[in-house]
Image (cartoon, rainbow, N blue to C red):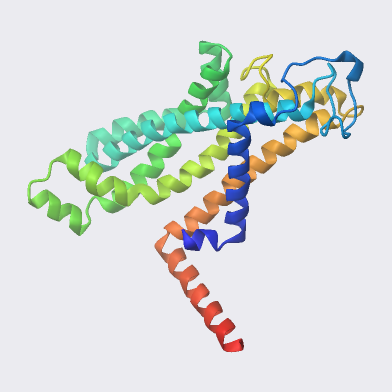
Length: 289
């Protein structure tokens, strides 16, 4: 944790994520107005003291809709990645540990899902289930399950023949105990990094699905939906699309920066290099003082 917090990009990412979580949790108290409070007399007003982010074509406060849309993006990202994390880790865990026909069957199923571009697979799933926030979570979760399966399988292959796993097996430990007590904890670091990166892609996927009308449905606010509604007014009222777009950029950037930081501190070689760099820098600073 000290190494992670010693990195300025990781600190920036943590600050942004904390701010977005606070906004999503206390959105009703933070938003100046309701998401669908219409005032046509104030339509297409530029950012000002009365409306910090301006108003849209119906006179709704853009700042309020951006604030209230944060919960949707975080909720969809967390639930979808949580689904794909559990399913993908289980598939990769059993495929990597047992090998042979189990590995062949499970990973060929994952290859079938990998054969489709992510957004096209999500659209296909929603075409079957119907548009909506819940179905968008399911579609995104299915899309990213193969990613977690491959990452987990690769990590398990490097862990399953280690000395401590063999020693536990020699004293009669069951497969379930080996899997969840010894193999999974030691294969977790790359999965943790992949979780952070997948959260960024899940936010983008939700915004893309909402942009084309397959994600969050009106009148619920969604950053992707706001981008879609604002693109027709980009010359006349740029703020309708720019501010939700900036919110997406900041959130995705924060998840990616956090993923980079986690990769550095969880990888043994990178962690050793960072620790050595800190000791060297600290020693030079003390000598200079």
